[in-house]
Length: 628
Image 1 (cartoon, one colour):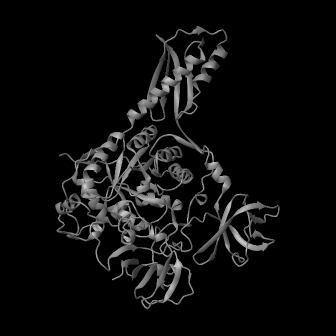
Image 2: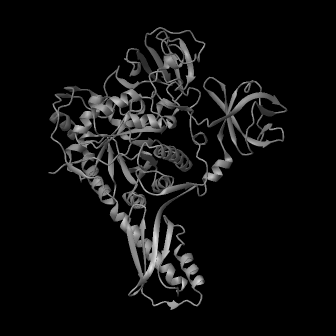
Image 3: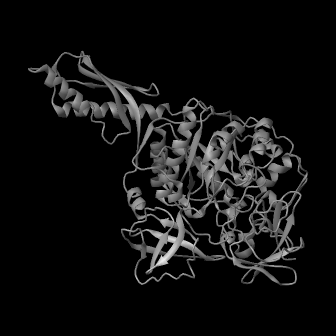
């Protein structure tokens, strides 16, 4: 049985990696400048609601490969024994469909007879340390997707200790717990995050109590975080060793994919122009018909999330897990049932605005009209109360009707430039071309052609017809006409042009380079001898993988045998105490009038569910456990 491992990609280029909920979203991501997209197959992806047929994934591969963009299959759930063979068959199908790599979590897959496809270690494999990343590299992974919580210094430390390709998230929603190490959803209702069915308990409203049952904070979204936005840190990430920049969002809307992909395409292009890389990792140039702005897409507010150190500022979104959008101003006054803001704004009828009314409470309304004094009047029977909107309250626009309408249309176009040459041929006429990647094509028109009565008119007609590249993925840079003046029917010239572009597309698909692989390395020792349920070994092949690497004790995965009371179901860099202003060392701005509790365990409650919260200040981590 031959096993393979990726040799290594030419990653001096910077890769923008965008999410694809489905084929349509994936094509939009490519059109808006993505160098690669990741998409879930019909089974075994960590977003069960974003599965796709092999046929659709194959169609996306064909579309992306025209631009030398890549398609990665998110195959990153844990597998049970009865799923191993179906998983193997699906991987074979994905490989033959043209998928460029698999993003996986389950180590059992490395014990299977797989096609020669590169394997990427999902962030679900909990990639936080040089030891872990080095082990994954030595085990045959071609890329490791790092934990979101890592600061730049830790990324650089991993880069210095390894040579494997490194990928990092730069934008989107944040899991509050370390990815792959969160079992809270499974503990509450059996919906396993590691199996693609997370119920998102981190977005619920929780009440915080001390051990005496005293309420310290009531009905707040205490585990909900802002969204990641690292647009201002891309150069720092490049210096630290990141070459692939990932946007979260396989469950997000199409306008989100367009807007955020376009935004980071422009940011990475700016880095490339300043010499951080020779070029982007795919072909073609994207023209945008809108101005990308991440504030106008779903967001809970933004944070760089520990990237610049262990004191990240405000990372929590305790008021609401919903999108707040973009700030438009603070309340100046309420006058005649109209909202008056303290600054110039561009609110329009149909826009939606929202504002906090109390801790954990968010209200809003749609705009009916804005008068000549910029007073904002609510729609319908909505009444504005001064108690809800006291002076100084920040108001946000969470629905921009004009932007939404713009995003529903054609928002970008991606073109590959080429040079054409039209000349005589013994059989008639030849049209040839070479594109920006030096891919060539030629087509023949086997007709004699009539001498032109008006050479200038004939030449103009040839230029016009051959230059009609229209809705193709190509853009003509230069056309050279070397034939004597002839008259050719427009239909003949159009057919010649179509034949050439069809040939060029086929030649580009043939030229798309699949990432090469080689036999997998001999197993190396794991750096620990004992593994608990957090190793996520859910099948006999995953157990076999670790045993071959010297592990002597391996507990079954949480999904196979849930541990008893007191089990840690989440470990997080987010700290409730710090976010509430109760940490003297690294406190955010105090957001609570409650007295600071002791370091004794606290408790989170939601309905019938109750969890213990402990604080590990030396590691600057918080842990949530089932009540013991």
